[in-house]
Image (cartoon, rainbow, N blue to C red):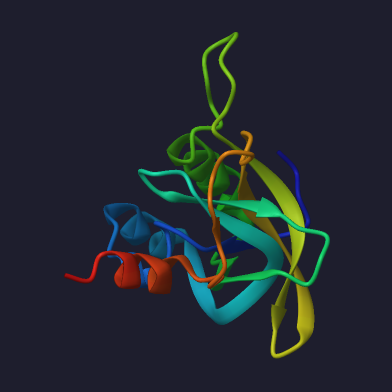
Length: 142
């Protein structure tokens, strides 16, 4: 994949606050630019929250990263595609899809990639808070 965009917006398990083992991989190939927001909405799938694009004034919170090496970006993003379930067998539907978005840091747009949920959210409750980490912390309080 040839690209001129080397940034990635993450909002779930790849965020620094989740302590997911995949985060270690992410930080080998990308460096944190800071917190950002993207126009979208979260839904509670049950096992985990999912995000979809939105056309209204709904925003989701996450982190914006930039590739450490333009030369390694294609390989690194392919590995993340595999982690996010984009590489499926023939006849299967990927769980997520990667798309270009504008991530906003302090109101300034910056183009980057995001992994959107690739299924229907019709029967899922919307997560109004817009921040998966905060939502899960509140949901899992004793």
